[in-house]
Length: 199
Length: 233
Image (tube, rainbow over all chains, first blue to last red; front, side):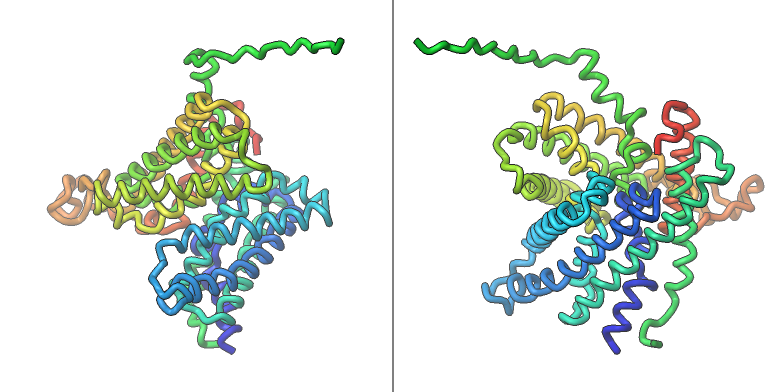
């Protein structure tokens, strides 16, 4: 039950994209159509779900004082996390290039930019701060990814519809996306008061 | 007798600061501004702009990392194998960010504590990685340095504008100078002033969504002022 709590908390109550505004660059740039948003969201779920457990293992077994080196190496945490994330993203890039070249071309530069997506690194740092167990970190990774996926699908759907509305020319496109995201963020602030242990 | 091919000697372009180079600095301030046009570096623009002092320190840090990572990547661009390209770039950026973090810790500990996590998150700042991939991997060090300088300054300007609005309307201070507020420490004391007695700080400005609204309006103003940018994304 604890795992479901962590999943729901990561996906809705502390949504990485709408409560903490992490991963905004890819979020705003790829959300013009639902199709590309869907692809990027899936890639983010995949990367988060895989890197979270690996980072947990690194954090506990290599860097901590109970780890195999026996010293407090936490100052290396950022560099190691980033290295793991970079390798996983390279892997995802190769898989997508082989199985769906159209998606690969439409994602363009934003696929390698998942590496520097603040959501992935930020999620790992939250996991460290929250001192989750291994199962909980998997649930947190999948939940965080799922929440980000929902957020980007939602804004892509809204942006597709709003293309047919009468928006002032200078506000069309990017400016509107910012204001929409701000409104969605305010809406999600309403969820922040929910106690996750109530489930 | 073997025919010797005539290899034309490629003329190395001289290092100069002419019109093209000046364009590399001024373009990111206006036409290709990293935040409002290229959609890069948004995460830190939201989190760091609660105060102008933090925004200023952050923009100096980003300019430094951007310029020097551009120079280093451009110098190494022909010797990095394609497969490890991203990891090498990340190591370069991480090293520079560590230098910035330790310098900041030594020079101004107060700012270091205020910015704690976000100095580390410069590593994931899309501007730096984006410029490395788009420009420095294919251009010479001098142009790459100028490009990094331009993008860093463009980012800094938007950061300062957003921070000004958020800090002034959210807390009533500018660079920690108390301007308008409810107690007598402020320059304009709203509890005693007859002209501004109705004014209260807007607490929404201190929260994250307000940064989104302010940046949205900045984009609106920027694109109305520069009609070339309408419908660019």
